[in-house]
Image (cartoon, rainbow, N blue to C red; front, side, top):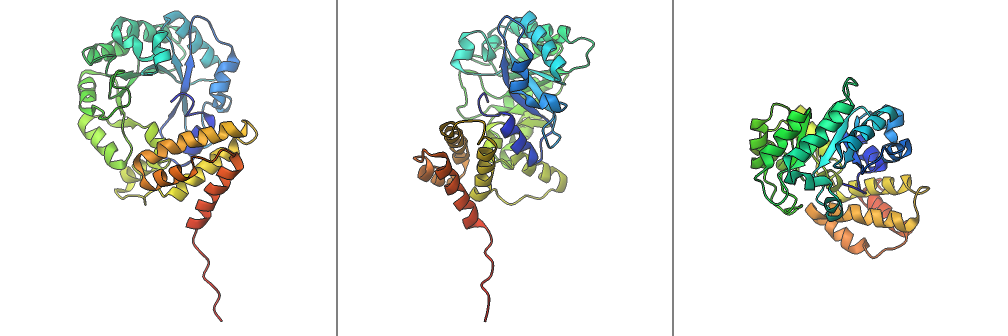
Length: 322
C-alpha cells in the first residue's frame, strides 16, 4: 500500500469507524539508522500517541532484510513514539524484491527468522509488540508454513497473511483456505488478508481461514465504509445501507481538501484518480463516473465535478405550496 495509505487517508478512513488498528506505509531500511524525521514523515501520528485523530492505534511498518539495521531502526521508531512495529514480508513490487526486501525473504525461512529476531532483540524490555505481514510464499507455497513458523519462533506476536504468493501478486483468487493451514499450526493470532472487498468476502475469508480477524487494504479504499460495515454487522447482525457513489465522492473531496496546501494540483488529481481506479473495481456506479471524470486534469474542476455528484444525491427540499 506504499503511496496509498498515507496519514491523510488513515485519518479519513479511521474516522468512519470499524478499525481496531491501522498499519502505515513501510519505512524502507537498508543498512543504517534513519533520522527521526523519516519516521515522523511516514507516521506523523507518532506525535499524537501513535493514534489517528479518531483514536485508532497506528502501527509503524518496517521493510528490509538486515537484522541489525532493522533492530536499530525499530529502536529509533520507538524513541519517536511508535507503540507497535510491523515487519513487511509481503510487498510484491519488483524494485523492492530486487533489493532483498518484502516477499523476497520468503524464499528462505532463515531470513525471516533473522529479520524478526533482530527487531525483537532490539526492543527487548520495551514492551513493544512486533508483528509480521507475510504472503504464502515467493514462487510457490511450499515454504508457507516454514516461514510462518520462523516468524513466530523469532518472537512475532501476530502474523498477518496475504493469501497469495509473490508471483500471484494481486491476481484472483485469494487462497484463504491456505491461510487456515498456517492458523492451525501457529500458536499466535493469525490475521487473514487479501480480496476482502465486501461483507460477504469478509465472512467467506473468515470461514475458510478460520481466522477471527481480517485485514483490509484495497477493500477499504474501494469502500471507505467497509470496516464500519463489518463492525456494524458483528454488533447488530444487520447490514448498513450500501455505500453510494455520492458517499465515495464526499470521501474523495475531503481527501483533496486536506491536501490542498500540501501538494501541487496535478499531484492531487493523480492521487484522486488512483483512488477512483480502486473504487471502480467492485462498483458499477464508480466505474461509470471514473470513465467520465478520468480525462479531467485540473484539480478544482475535478473537485467541482465530485461536489456536483454529492449535491445531486442530496435530499431535495419540498417545493412550497400555494
